[in-house]
Length: 380
Ligand SMILES: Cc1cc2nc3c(=O)[nH]c(=O)nc-3n(C[C@H](O)[C@H](O)[C@H](O)COP(=O)(O)OP(=O)(O)OC[C@H]3O[C@@H](n4cnc5c(N)ncnc54)[C@H](O)[C@@H]3O)c2cc1C
Image (cartoon, rainbow, N blue to C red; front, side, top):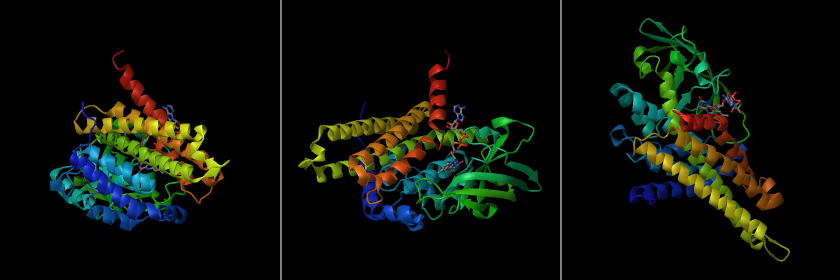
């Protein structure tokens, strides 16, 4: 057993931290207030190799491992959770399924521009009528001439307004109910129409868009993996993606603790630093302990995935626990800051708003428990 990061993992973590502290954190408050998607940041991250951390070098990625990737997500999310989710969806939900399931031609065509950060990727599974029950989706793909005609509505697609490559799920077998009739496709921006940019509680520097697929005709070679294997692509993608969201949650929680600790040693009441009151010290200690546990679960799940070992339940545990820690920690950070925590003068309230989504997307906490219990009770 070895808890130490490798030299390469430490170097990538340091690179991400340095970039996040100098180029992201100072602007995160403004981006949040202005609801600004910082497109230029992703080009710079691309130049550093951070838009394709765990993508193989021969496909223009950095060729690092999945552990390095989650370390990067934690650092980016610590500075700005909106930037964190943009990179997470771009990498693990859009790029990696092409690396894993794509044909050689699909890989060569789509992956290098994604891995270099020249274009952004998106993942369109959710629809107005199908969220947790993703297998009930209603978008259709019908064979026509040399290709597929795809029609339907997708909801809350992260990066939807800025992406060039979309992994889209549609029903190719209308006679089959549920997950078995679903296939995955690779679409371009001109195949999809953005109908709405969502207004959200937090993550204001990220894009969450509704899409219409108005009978887009795509050639046969845009099918990703085999026909009717789309649900398997989606589930495998989410198994890995969840570990990234756990890392995002750890990053938010760490940012909340950093803010609370810095404030506690500055603020004086009753003639002493509030950090000297045991009530405050214990809060900080509990926050640090929970974050350490969440980080270990997240790194363990990432390590299992990298080792090619089963990681579905472990990723679900990491997300379930880390997302709770992010919500609790950001809530406690507001408490440590008192009234200032409730104001926009300090970032604690942003962390609180950003933290909540980690309990919802890429599978709600209830769905994570279903995944964990299914594994736990298998064979009993
Ligand atoms: C900001 C944001 C970004 C997103 N990005 C993307 C994206 O890029 N691509 C994409 O495809 N989707 C995306 N989503 C969608 C997200 O993954 C879904 O919102 C999520 O999976 C939950 O689906 P739902 O909102 O329809 O909730 P529902 O499925 O309607 O669930 C409502 C409630 O019922 C509970 N519930 C549902 N089923 C069960 C069950 N069997 N047992 C117990 N409880 C249950 C849920 O846990 C939840 O509490 C995004 C959403 C948001 C808000």
